[in-house]
Length: 596
Image (cartoon, rainbow, N blue to C red; front, side):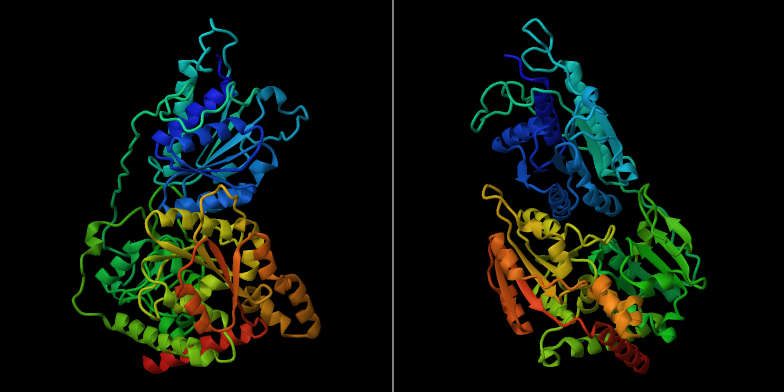
């Protein structure tokens, strides 16, 4: 019996992806992608991979992104049908591109003879993701035999076609993982399929062997060792004694190790992977508002991608500060201020050898300032300070205080990640923090957190998420999970201030305070109150919801055992956010000035 070429090609492609280390695939349903859907279902039944099904392609893309994050950068494939389904992947593709996560996009398409003819669900998918992908290929529709004498009969494909497919997957996986470039990221494999799109015989139940008819048995896993080369020397353009480390998103533990080896203050973003330790400076972004402290910095070494703080960007843009950027791989280096004096692809081991036995006066000065900032932040977020009700900052601290090194925290963009930045470390080592900081968007965060939770559970880690209300509402569809899908254990803390309070802390909030008309305009186009009932939304998705009214209750809820997805809502005020943020900054700077 001749197996349809589309089905045989999909089976060969899936089998080869398995050999190259793809363990998770996210599928959004569709007709043109049916050959891949059947092949993935067969592979999942054979325990070759784990299949996740979501009905919304945007959620599917961010779920795949979260699975990769939670698997510490493992390649994850996501499958869609043709048309707008492909376009819905674009936000996740952009995030993966800027973050360097290896997503493998398998998009089904019409064959060439149907393109440009007005065929349903057909658009130009070739190059749709532009420069956001590391590799893109348009795979022609496979051809097959028409009878038993044809060389493609039986398997549906000849050996040359299978070899071509494996060549495509080899290049795609290699580019996604950045084996040659050191610059991992998403890749796009556009797959044209002709009818028939379904297997010619009933699907088997649970095959004992993947070498069933038309399903090639996987070759031994292909392992390509990653080679890390170190470059550079300790010679820097500025004064080493007055150097700070700026650890942006994805910097990794090397940033903290470097700071402690060289005796330099550490300014670490929550998702840097470098928080904590004796040199980490609490409230550093508020302290940089003090000229008395900031003017003493002569050099900054940047690892990762700093995105959170305008004061940090102003520091990196100072002509008087010599900036050294460490940026491995072939991607663009982070230098938004266009002020980098040196760009290194890596650091030699000598950088991590202790340079001094005693802390320098410069380090001690920043440690003292950080300790003063920590005392102010502690006073602003302790239980006695929030007797009138929780604030966004006290909620962030409660979450960070409850979670430990065995936990993962996915934090949303806008205010939650900035609040967490101020309180993380006040109560000892907190959780590992993950965030979508590639483009710092709020879209897809619920789905990202679900993907992280699925992957992290395999490592025995528990996952929570800290989101604002607009971030939650933007991806509320990420709560949807079919009854046959893998259970996600995830607690989502939603800080609900009925709108976008981040804008109140920017120049828009200052302008809004100038008149009633400006305030009304701000409220409509920036504040965007919604009045949504989160409990009813959760009920519609079959998700548990709990409204907590104080910080002790929140801590108790986070410490209790949980199963499935649970939403914990905390309502906080938004009206005074600008005044509160300015007052806090002033208090921190005054305390630091007195201390140093």
